[in-house]
Every structure is written in structure tokens, then in C-alpha cells.
Image (cartoon, rainbow over all chains, first blue to last red; front, side, top):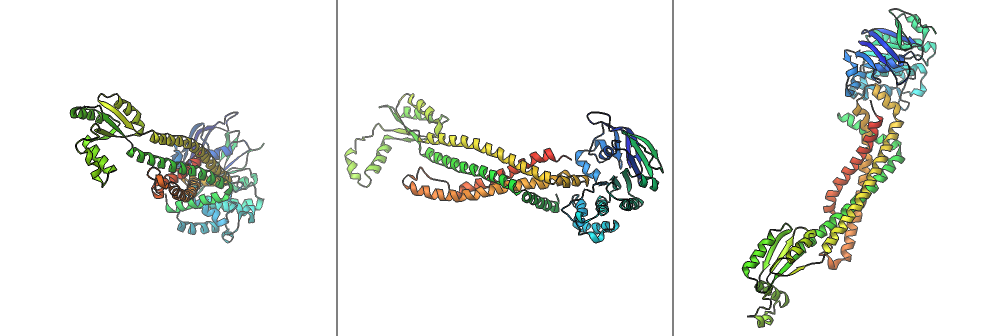
Length: 228
Length: 302
């Protein structure tokens, strides 16, 4: 599903952000990627979304050779990957329904499908009642659920979550994690980049730990082993 | 492109225009000025051309022969003239024809007054060729050739009124071309800035669209629509103004120059606008397209 072979990414100066990484994530896996800031986690996500090109090495996603992907094919790669961020990135001038529908509109999904699919997704994340609310009227946890609904509405096989609980209190963090687990159980491959030691330790999933651009450990059922 | 996408782009493009009204107005204003000038100069130039063309049709050169030139020599001279590139056609007027025309013109129905000349053609040496030329600019070259011909006594040609018109038309053309190029550049620059502001305002939205897998075209189309709409509005306004000005100006000038309306005759408003409307709209849309494309290519890389 996601394969990285000897991937390095060098920015113009200094040490490489990612240094010769080999990584394989199978279909349907739930993976935590942990590490200090500067470990290369964000660079890794950008490489997967083809926002950055690797300096060396090969990246495959869903059997697509990402390095050689033509520019006009990039949007189709991204349709296979749902993304959520720490800061939610919702459109403030649109309500919950329109934020989720937006993801479908921009890939030209027929209106009929949008009208069916958006309420279903909002029900799944538990926000069916609040479809008319605007982001500023929602709590952090609720905003992240909207972001999740938006990331999943197009039914991508992969979900990337970049610090999804970074702005949330423990209760909301747990709810989001339960939701991610639920999504994973339905067959979506979930990759979560996080600092949240408590959650990583408790969930007992595969944990990949990065430091200074290299993978220092990869445990099948691990905990948050990285210590400063 | 799906119809739905077309309407989406149109709607978003109009939203963009409304979001930064001031810049959009400035862009529309510049394009209006630009296309107004294009239209104005176009109207002047086509009318000048029209007048020159009319004048050219009336302009001709007449040559007369030395006394005693034989008919064969005249025919030989005629053949030589016909071969010149400047010459459109030539007409021969024999001495008899010249007298007949003269009688008709000056004695009219009092033909008896000319009876005294019955057997003595006073225009006996007035056989001539009337030469019509292709382009008034070639007149001087042809005249000097004709004057150098053996057997040619006199070359009559009109003064260079027509070539003055041509020169004036050319000057108007150069000045307007320079002004139009400057205004086009300003128009493109302003549109590109207007679109830039639209893109900056919607940066977050665009980033999300790209992450969700929107195609390049889908992301860019609203901004292209924005530029093209501004360009089209900027073309439509001066067309309306020019239409009013032109039809009134023609009416006024024709009233003023009634006496010389054979030289001063204008193209009808429809004749001018048949060309001007599509040209102005294409230029307007073109400026809009180029202005937005410059910014889009710079700012909306996937």
C-alpha cells in the first residue's frame, strides 16, 4: 500500500530531513509515527502527498510509482489519501455540511451523491445534528470530527492524520482516536503522526519512531519508546 | 468540462470579483480606457482609409501626346503604360471623343453653339490616356516615368491630397498603436494583480482543494473566469460609449460638411461596429485571460 525504498530528502542546507528510509505499510494497517520535532515526520507526510519530491529513493502508493507521476496525475493520487491536520483547516465561512461537501465538489462528484454521502459521514462522526453550524460555533473536538468527515467523504483507502489530537484535551483526543480506530476497522489504512505518548502506549498499534530523519525503531505492537 | 463545473467556476469567479471590488473596478476602468482608444482610433483609421480609397478611385493621371503623334505610337505608349505595376487600368480618349465630351459638358442642349467648330475640331491635339492607379502612394513614381516617355507632351495629375490623407492615417495609426500597447500592458498588469489578491484571500481554500485532489483546471478556472469577466465588461462599456459617440459625430460632421460630402463621407455605424464589436470583445477577453494566466502560472502550482 505505502512503500518507501531508500528515500532521502535534503533541503538546500544542513542535514537531510529524511535520511535513507525504508518503510512498508500494508493495506488496512494502523500505524503511529512518533518522534521529536525535526525528526522528519512532516517531511514524510509531504512526500506521501507529493507536495515534495524525494532527493533519492522510490515511493510507491497503491502500486503507483509516485516519483514518476505526471503533474496532472497528482490530484488523482491525492484522492486516494484523506488528510487531517492539527489545526483542522476548515473553511470558516462555510457551515459543517458545506465543509464536508466541499471535498466532493472539488472533485466534481454529482450533487445527488453529495446529498447522500455528506449526511452519512456526519452521522458517522456524530455530528449529524450540527450540520448547519459554523466552525467557530464548534469545540476543537467537533471541528476535528468535521475535518475527519471531510477527509473520508471521498472514501480514500488511506488516511493520514498529522497530529490530529495536538489541539485537543484528553477526552476529545480519545474520542478522535476511537473514531480513527473505527475507521481503520472498516478497512482504511490509517497513519497517525503524533506526540501523544499516553495514547500511543494505550492503543498498542504498530509504532514507527523517527529521530533526525531516520527510523530508529519499528514495533508491531509498540509503545512510545522515544525519550529525549 | 462538466456543465456543473462551468457554473461553479462562473459563480466563484463572480464571487472573486465582488470580494475585491476596488481592484476589479480599477481593472475594468483601465481596460475600458484601452478599448475605448482602440475603438476610437479604429473608427478614425477605417474612415480615413475609406476616404482615401474613395479619393483614389477619383484620382487619375491624364497624358497628352506631342503634335502629330501617330495612332500606332499612341497604341505603343498605351501598351507600355499598361505593363506598369502601378496601373490599374487605362482609358483612351480620342480627339473626337474629347470634343464630344466637351460639347456635352459646356454647351449641353445648346448644341447649335458648337456648330461653328463642326469641321475644325478645336481639340484636335487632345487625344489622351486616362490612367487609373492601384495605390495613390505610387503616383509620383509613375508620373516621372510618364514624363520621361517619348511622344508624351503633358502629364496632368492631381495634387497630393490623397497621399496627405494616407500620411495622416499612418501617423494616427502609429500614435494609437503606441498608446494601445501601453494601455494593454497596464490592463494586463492590473488584472494580474486583481487575480493575485483573489488568490491570496483564498489561499487556505486553494490549499485544501489541492489536498482533496482537485485538478489544476478546477482550481484555476474561477480565477480565469474572473479575469475574462473583467475583460469582457471592460470591453462592453467602451463599445456602448463609442456607439453613441460615433453615430452622433457622423451625423454632426455630415451636417457641417454637406457641400463636400463626396470627399468627406463616413462609414455607417453598423459597418464600423460589425468589426469593432468582435475585435473589442476578443481583446477584452484576451487581456483578462493573459492577466489571470500570468498570476495563475506563478501562484497556483500544484
